[in-house]
Image 1 (cartoon, rainbow, N blue to C red):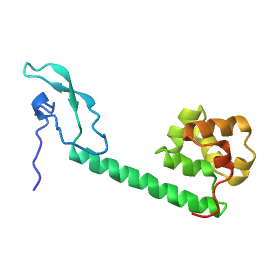
Image 2: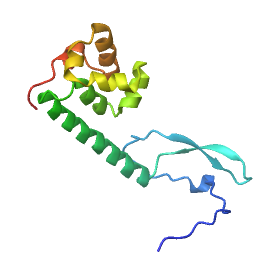
Image 3: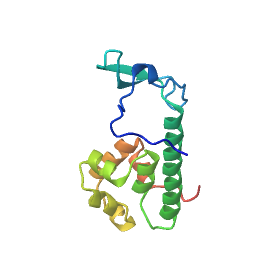
Image 4: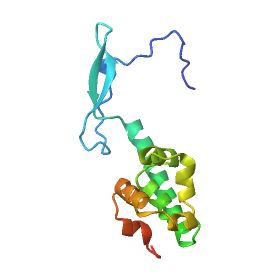
Length: 146
C-alpha cells in the first residue's frame, strides 16, 4: 500500500536528499536545482539526475520517435508534410514549433497539409530548415522509402 502524505508535511527537498544517480541521458552534465540547507534556507544544489527522471525521459524520446515514424509513413502517403516529421525528430509539438517560428499553432498545423506545404515560400522553408538543422532540399525532397 502507498503512504499517505500529510498536507501539513514539509515537502521541500533537503540538500542531503538531492539524488546523484549517474544517468546516461545527461552525459555527465550536472543540473542545477534548489534545495533546503541545514539552516532551512533555499540554496543552489547540483545533481547528475535520478533514475526516475531518466526512465521518463526515455519514454518521451521513444514517443517522439514513434510519432516521427508515423509521420514519415503519412508523408509517403501524401497525408502530411515533412514539417511534421522533422518537428517530431527535434522533440517538438505544434505549439513549441509555432512559438519558435513566430507563428500561430494553426498556421504550423496548416503547413502539415501537403498542398499548403508545396506552396510555401523559400523564406519560411529556410526558417523551418534552420530550426530543424536540415537543408531546404531535405525538407522539399523527403525520401520515398525508408
